Image 1 (tube, rainbow, N blue to C red):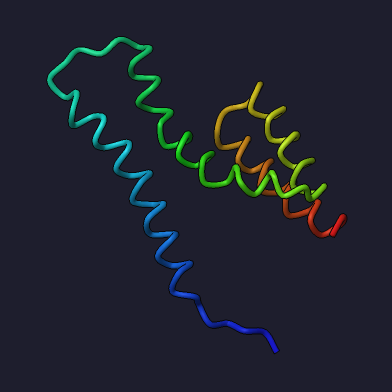
Image 2 (cartoon, rainbow, N blue to C red; image 1 turned 30 degrees about the vertical axis):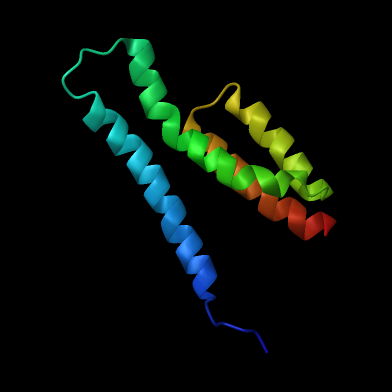
Length: 103
């Protein structure tokens, strides 16, 4: 039988990560709303949520599981030449398929 109960700790962790992502984006814009920003500064503000996402998922890749390490390599390779959305799709798909095949 599959346990379908949702662990409250997981829900709290998801809500806190979502809040951190949202707040890093909005607080940067609010704090700098009266200033003229260079294109480089705008790029930094737009990439902050991605940095939060990386800090959340990075510990999973030091686990030593081959499927995760290969998926990480494929995601990094995709990130060098593709925009964010295709990179995320490739990363999630690679991790899912490789976990099924290698684990």
